[in-house]
Image (cartoon, rainbow, N blue to C red; front, top):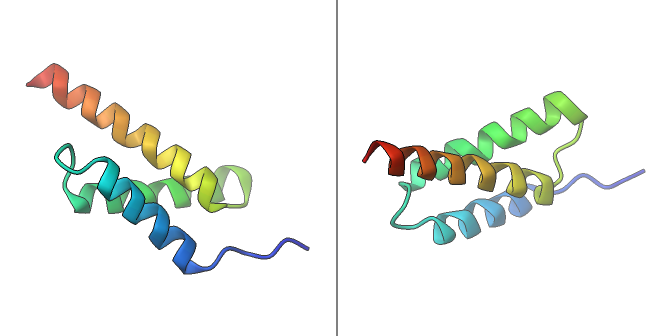
Length: 72
């Protein structure tokens, strides 16, 4: 049986994305995207490995940045 990731793994994902998107998105937006990615992964696949959550959240943040760029 696979071991479930601990909360530190998600904290590390969130921290890395906050650094990556600093100056692009507020920290609260990054947090919401990570939470949404976690929830979406669980709903669709039944699991939410940190690497999957990170990929989904990064895509969300990239799309939000693109939309903001088009509006600005």
